[in-house]
Length: 173
Image (cartoon, rainbow, N blue to C red; front, side, top):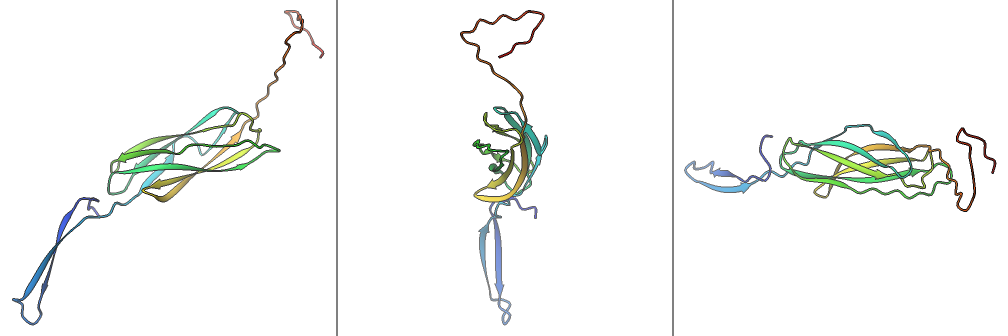
């Protein structure tokens, strides 16, 4: 249980004849423990977040290597979009990784996802961050991102001659 991984050590096997105890043979075998890919991953901020269209949302996670050798971890996003109305926005996010993390050492991941500028308010994205190491998927962390409602108007008054009283007044278009 306390044997470090990838550190060779020698085992000696001895065979003794049961008919004549003086007859025996030995062989030495060099072996090493295989690495154990064990990680603890926790979300620092929240597992449910929201963002405005066009905003870059950051989710911070801590990861601790509980294995028996230095290791690396990659968080690979898989996203399921539950669109509001006719939202046809395309979502994407990149994997984040750390390598060479020592036994019982911790690292911080900053996972970023940009809310598409054309995303509709109320669209929900379920994100599963797959914990992968050395081609193995060893766990996952689930997150939810909801698109906020953003009110705003844009008025193009190019080529117009509009005067508004500094004290304010109503404008009818």
